[in-house]
Amino acid sequence: MVQFSLSPFERLAHTRPVLDLIAFYVAVDPFLGPPSNLVSLLLASRTVHEHLCVKNNPHLYSDIFRYKFDVAALERRLSPTWTSASCLANELRLRCVALKYIRRGRVSGPPDRDALWRSTKAGNEQHLCQWANLPQWALSAVALRCLPLRDYDDLPPDPEGTSLALWLLWMTSKRVRSEGINPCSMVLSSVSPLLVRGYQYPSFFAPDTHFYLPLCDEHDTITAGFSGATTLVSSVYYCAHQLQLAVPPLTPAALLNYLVRREARQDNARLHPQVADLPATRQEAIARGISAPALTQEDVAEFHYHTRTHFFNNPRSHGGRSVSETLDVEWFRLVSCHDLWDVERPLRGIVYSLGTFAGNWSGRMILPDTQTHINATLDHRIHPNSVQMVQERVSCRFEEHHCLRFSEPLVAPLCPSGSGGEDILNAWLPRNTRIRRKANGLQIFDPNTGKDTWYETYCPDRTQPYSPAACQRLLNESGMGWYRRSPSASAADDDEYEDYVEETLSGVLDIIITGEVSVCVEDRGVDLIMRDNNSLSD
Image 1: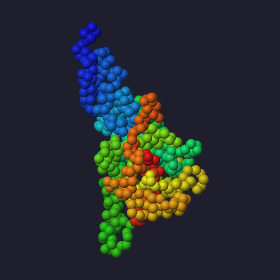
Image 2 (image 1 turned 45 degrees about the horizontal axis):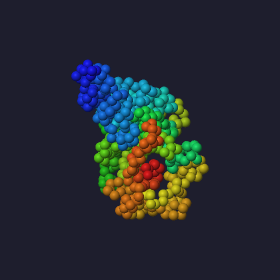
Image 3 (image 1 turned 120 degrees about the vertical axis):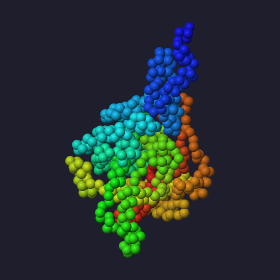
Image 4 (image 1 turned 30 degrees about the vertical axis):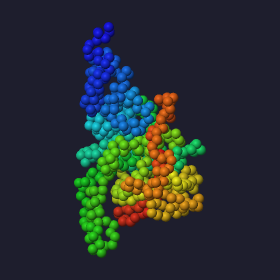
């Protein structure tokens, strides 16, 4: 009897797929921005509202989320308990709130926090940049947090927000050449103090004094190192769960924003007149009998006009993957690296892509005037922007060598000073280690054990990155390959420690990086050996 009192349209609520489909197509057109057109439909009547509200119909809003946002990223990074219909419906609401907040263009310290975090995870550049105008908002967010440093403050008033705003600015800085003189100057003057006093801010997720991570219970304190302040930790509400995240390091974001704007200014700047005194090319220098000149006009012009920092979302760095896939490693670092003692990290995935360092690199270093920098460090009354910084070219060639699971990795020695941690001053390598380069790898003698061990050279541009013998042995190893650890049936949805994501067993126990670095000004090469303490998912 009640049904006959309803209008024909209201009766569609009892034919669930029909009204749901109508609501879905109303919500996703237009694609960009929140599903604002759905509001009129929800106001049609109480019956329609009762049927279409989030509480009674989370699957509808979950479908809207899947259409508008990159749900594949969530499914790669989170377990099924985080991507249920009710979780995605809740996340849709929060993302729409953040998009509207950003679109209004206002920046206001603590109220920006949720929008800053959610922008780094929103999973759809179109909504943020085309609808919400994120680039301009990020520029304003940086100005709000960094410009007070002109008043000689030692630290930004909101280090968490400053870091997030700088990373968002970097990720949206594709058009710095059309940014305008005033915004560009504002960014340069804002981030320059963060570079001059970079030692005050986090640069890495873990102190360099500790090679073995996570720390065991016997380490009740963290040994202070040379990598800046301790990483900040934040708690955010994400997909209807509380999630602990490491705040991304501030200093690298400041450096990237600084470099791309300095380089943009060089595009139209003439070379110094004294460059004309140099040989035009290397061939001319040789013909004129000038032995090993430090620079030629060709070298200076190439560095000045063509050596450029790659912008974020550079297609050449994707390797056929989506943008969100290239950021999976960054995501897992934030999830996994907030607690140095946390052995059980259920949402942890791969935090280092094998072969990241391997290859030829060319770029620039920013060097401050030494004495002025020391003075500004000791006397905070000296404004950081008074420290002059110059650029030098640096070229590198790196190789990665991996200790695979059928070899014995080198043992990182304790710090000889007894202050705690491992010996970072010798790159976590035993003193008097002897390294011999051979075909396909390194033979390394460990003086502490009196034994040789083997590290395979990793070649990322080959189908089989190791030698044929090593690749075959890895394939024969039991337990290699992909696997999924799923939450138990009795696990509570809000129990993060029962949530696991898909991982891969890399078979890599340790990484040593060898290479050669040449500074163009001095025209000389320097051999170097480094050891990577990134935690691998094995």
